[in-house]
Length: 389
Image 1 (cartoon, rainbow, N blue to C red):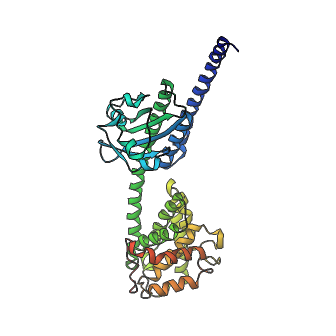
Image 2: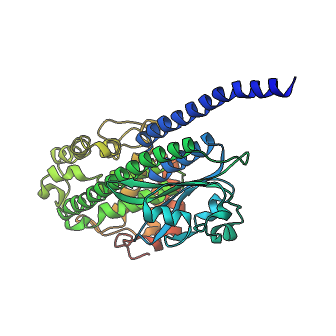
Image 3: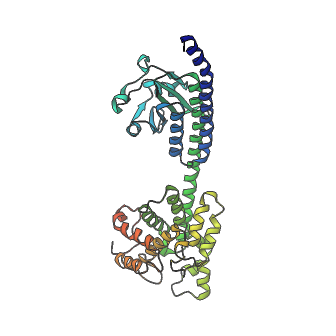
C-alpha cells in the first residue's frame, strides 16, 4: 500500500473514531446522571463517578477534591488510580497547584504538559510517587459556590486531552456538584430527624422512671451485636433507628399500666402487647423509617414462635428484630424495675445463653454476648444500673 493510500485510509477512519469517542463521552454524562440519583451515599456515588470518567477518557487516574471546614484547603474525597489510597491522607492549600487555581478562579483547565505550567505543584507527586504528565481540572460549582474540583490525569496512551474531553469533565463536574449539594442537604435533614427521634425516645422513657435511658442503651447494645456480623451500612442504619424507637408505641399506653408495681392483669398484658404494632404504625409513614418499622413491629417475637404480636418463628423474624430482642432483654435484666432489682451482668448473660434457641436467636445472642466485654467500656451509657460491671 502506498503512503498516499495509507493516509487516505487513516483520514477515512478518523471521523469514525471521533464519533465513537463522542458517543462514549455522551454515555458517560448520561451514566453519571443516573448514578447520582440511584446511589444514596456520597462517597460511594463519587467513587463510581470518577471510575466511569477515568475509564471513558482512557486516563490513568482521577480524583475529586472537596472543601471541608474552610475554603483554604482541599481534601481528596475520592481518588482512583495507582496512588488513590495514599491521596486520602493529603490536603492541598488552594494557593498552590492547578487544582488550587481552578478552585480559586472557578475556571476549568487543560494542561497537557504540566512541566510547562507555572501553577503545577510537584509536592503531591513527590509525596505519592505518581508522575503527573497531563491533566484536566474542572470546578464543582452549585449556586455560584465552589465545592471543590474534579481532576483527570494522564491519558493511557500518552496523547493529549482535547476540548471534547474538557466538555465531558465539565458536564460531569456540574452533575456531581448538584449531587453533593443534595446529599449534604439530605444529611442535614437526616440529622434533624435523628435529633427529633432521640428527643422522642427520651419522652417515651420518661413515662417510666425505671426505664430512663433504656432506648439509648438498647440502641447501643443492638449496634454492638450488629457490628460483629458484618451487616451492611444500610442495615446498621435501619437497626439504629429501629432500636432507639423500639418502644415508641408505649407513648399510647397508660403510664399507670407501665409503672404498675404489682403483676399485670390479662387485660393489661393485652394492652402492653399492642405497643409494637402501634409503634410500627406511627413510624412506617415516614419514608426513611419504613424499613425500621418492620423491626419495631417484630422485636417481641420469640425464636420458638411464642412471641407477639404475630407469632413469627426462627428465620422468619427479621434479623434486626432478633438483635433488638436480645438487646432489649439484656437492658431490662440489668436495670432496676418496679417489680424487682437489677440482675448482675453475669446472671443476665447466663439467662441469654439459657434462652438461646428458644426465646432468642442463637446467632444474635452469641454476637451480643461475645462483644459485650470488648465494647462495654466504649459505650456512652452505663450498663443499666447493675452492680456487677
